[in-house]
Length: 411
Image (cartoon, rainbow, N blue to C red):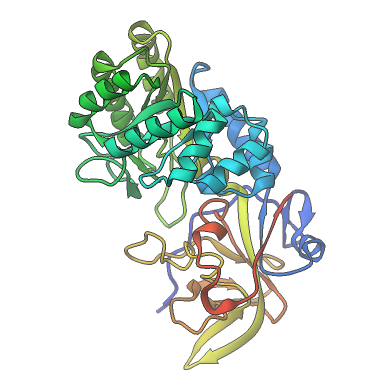
């Protein structure tokens, strides 16, 4: 009886020619030689183009697309996306610098996060971006820093809604949360914004992430619109920005299916006339991260040893959880599942085997694939982890055990 784990989500976005994966029209082994090291991440420009084109073709034209830099802040990737999206959303001063360096108009950058430090807020005010306020204390701090700079800060209110995005990978709103201002507390905060004469922009309502159920996203977006329309009655000025978050997921595991955009687009088409009539100045924004970049990236590590322990084959690589925490199962998974993994330079292979792929770290958590059927790999072969364009390198404990750093390339 086979002890293999179920097959992963099938990957079709990267061509396989002569049994070798191609990234950016380049054979994997040639790309590895060009990078000059393993491990590395590679992101395919053409797949970024395809995803933006898909969204533009399905969603109503009035909906603006923002890229959430936290998904992948690689400067070259952000600079490339700036030409294709309408705005950027940042979550730190470091991300703000990347956004400004990439050439995005500061008026189209917003800053979210529950613990913004005073230097970050001061920099955001000086840059003229929108600050998504997350507490009464943060509001008072922003007002004081604005007076010190003799500038009128541009602010929106991040709302912690009274509902959740069902079946989301990570719930960012509803119930008790560190994110945003509880919806029932928002009217008082809005009144205070008016008293302080800040430049009110609108609302940010982000319910959750990594959702593959269109019905859940449709429900959350509808309730976000209803909530925004209700809160607009207490706003100290016109609502100019209505960021309804994202939550769009990508498939990783057995049983996952791609998100159906059609019901989401139809629901947005229903709501847009309603919102435009009641909030005529409002720009409707979808804030997407993983959905834009996740499927465009791979992680590549080299097999440096292979061994058999009591009947189980182990492929030991020079990369692991210190570069790709999510693939190890330690970034949000309750029950560990394998990311899609192949031997990139012999995808089908002449021989197949059941193998477990581990990294070089001295911990049993350093696991990239457990009991998967793979082409028989030898020392020097290249292990590829798909769906690695989001929450990869910068979401990983890169200093753990002090191993060498990982490279990143945009091809």
